[in-house]
Image 1 (tube, rainbow, N blue to C red):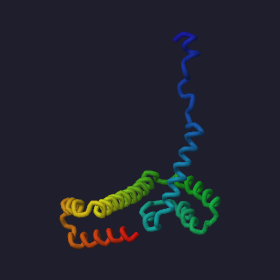
Image 2: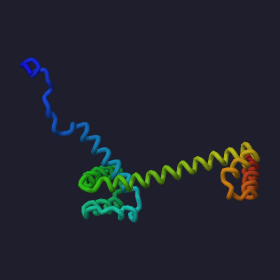
Image 3: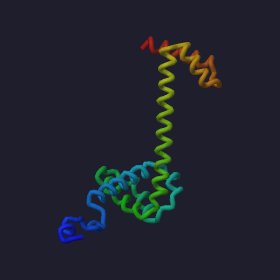
Image 4: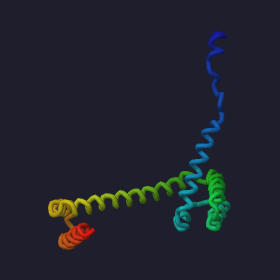
Amino acid sequence: MDEREELIAPEEGLRSSPSKSQVKRELHALQDLAERLLAMPRAELERLSLSAATWKAVDETARIKDHRALRRHYKHIAKLLAREDLDAVRALTDQKEGIKQEAAARHHRLERWRERLIDEGDQALTAFLTEHPGADSQRLRTLVRAARRGREQG
């Protein structure tokens, strides 16, 4: 390499630490994780092996009412979580999020079937019974008729 190339070539290892923006993104991600974690029931949190300091901060959350103080508290818990096993914490919160999303998707499927049964009548009921052979057809017919009447009456 001659002198010109040496001046133009980027220096390797110029940045050994992450950028300020990257650090902020990671801190915000930890704060979001802390919020999701604190929204969970205590019984589920006990599946994690958290340090005593983290448990103390988690218990302290219940007494904080001011929104600004709560935001600061989430930052504090985020810093504590950085010392914990983040994979286990993320796995637990992701599992709960997955369960929540599945429940929402199931609810949306039921709502679509309900609308279809009310709008299309017997055709939709036949399709539903084909897809779900264990369903009580008499009870469904009664419910569909009642829902139609309710819709017509406003």
